[in-house]
Image (cartoon, rainbow, N blue to C red; front, side):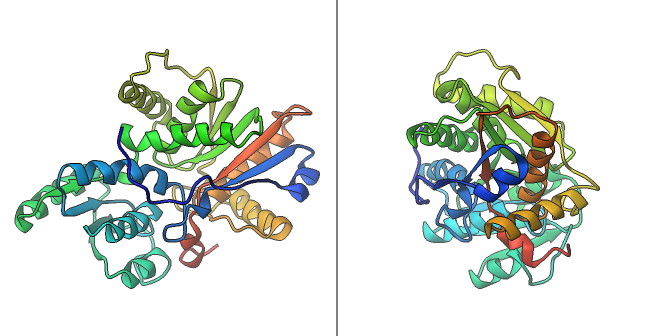
Length: 309
C-alpha cells in the first residue's frame, strides 16, 4: 500500500531505569510522542497511509472527527495543512470546547472546527457528506482515530521498526482508544515479532474484543497476508475508569510517576491510563524476570493543557 512521508522515523526506544527499579521489571519506552508533526503522536503513522489515499483520490478537503480534544483531529489538520489540503473537523460537542489544549492548536493552524451535539458518529459522517456536497470540492473522510484497516497498517509498520531497532521485547503495552493502534501492533507482532505479546489497555467502552480482530483481519487482507486472526498474542484490559476522557485516580498517579521519575509527560486520557495498566500488570507478576517490556508512548500532550486532573 502507498504511503506519504509525514513523520520522523524510527522513533527512539530507551530504558526507563527509575521506573524499572520501582516496578521490579525491565521497562522500556518507545517515543511515538516524537513523530515530528504537531506535538507528535501515534496518529502520524496512520495518516501516512490515509492521506496518501486521499491524495490518490484527488481530495482537496479532508474531514475527520472525534471528541472536542481529539489528538487525532489536531494531527489530521496539521498533516492536511502540510500537504496543501483543507481540513475540516466535525467534532462531538463533548469535553473541553474552549480555546485550550488541542482547540488552541487548531486555532493557531487556522483550522475550521464545527461541533455537533450528538453521540452518534453516524450523524457526523452524514454531516460530512452533506457539507462536502455543499462545498462542491472533492473530499475524503477519515474515521475517528484514523482506525480503519488502512490506518491500522501504520502500526504493522511500527512492529517492523521495533524489530529493526534490535531489542527483543516479550511484551508491548499500548492504549486502546479507537482500535487501530492496538490492532496494528497485534497484527504486526504476528508478522514481525512472533515472540511478543501485546497488551491493549482499553480507555473507552467500545467492544474492542470485536473491533480488534476485525481490524486485524481487514488489515491483513490489504497486505495479502493469509493468517489466522485470533487473540493468541494479545490481551485486552479495561482501564477506562470513570469514563472516556474522564481522568482516573490510577491514571493520574501513573502520569505523576512517569513525570516525577523519568521527566516524561503522559496524558490523562490515553497514555496515563495505559501506563497505569502496565503498573498493575507488573505488580500482579505478569512480566517474568528477564522479560523486556515496551510501553508505547502514543502522544496526547495537548490534553494535559485542557483537562482538569
